[in-house]
Length: 62
Image (cartoon, rainbow, N blue to C red; front, side, top):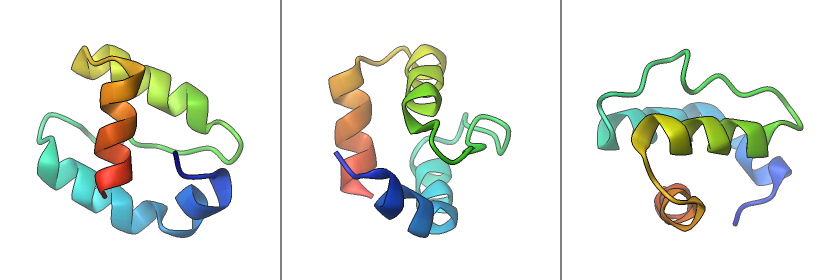
């Protein structure tokens, strides 16, 4: 799993890739508040109906 610094540093790029990969996601879904990456991942898990492991694999693949 990427750490917060890695996620913060590339988030705009990663957000674009994630939206391309999963078209149902909106900018609102992908709003990232520093230090709240676990909350965002949890929100995405609920929206997409995925397990934590599935969500981590998708984010790692970006």
